[in-house]
Image (cartoon, rainbow, N blue to C red; front, side, top):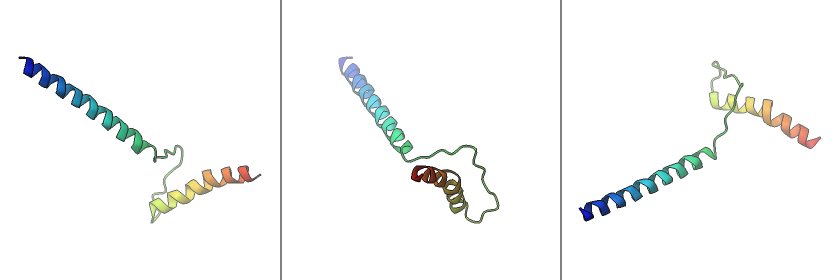
Length: 70
């Protein structure tokens, strides 16, 4: 009985550690994500990624840089 309780305790500690590691990885993966709201997608663009990057630059980054320069 005691050995089973020890085994259960060990497994519980391992599960807790794995949950913490999973949470850390999830948080790390979010560090490199940018969420954009109210920016419509252009369904006719041949290269969606490039078109989106250009719109983000024109509508968000460029005005910020112009304001910072001023």
